[in-house]
Length: 146
Image (cartoon, rainbow, N blue to C red):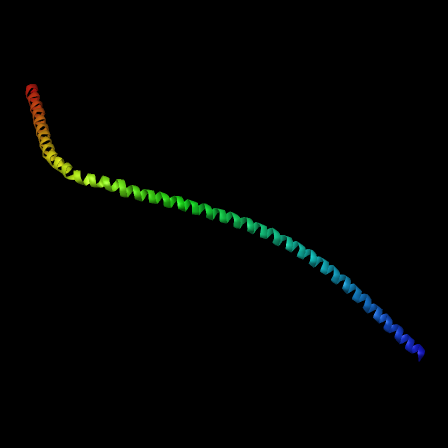
């Protein structure tokens, strides 16, 4: 019985030893996987740091562009204000002067129109007479050659 017990205990110990070896192997594999995971996490952390730096740089650039746009808008608003003042002060005054003198110009134009009409009528009459004279000269030449 002692031998049987001893043999059974021996087999149990061998089985436990096999299991322990298997557990140690699993633990070694687990440690390797954890080491790889830690390395992956370190790489991920480094990528996140780089990404954060890129985002921070882009935000700084965007803020600068916004500042530049605000400055441009302020400059544009100032130019618009200057144009409005110029229109109010100079153009309105010039329009008023033109309106005052408008009647004089209209009167002068109306006075000049009949003269132009008469000149055109005289030009037409002269062209008619020249054409008639040309026709008569051709008729005379035809009669002389016949």
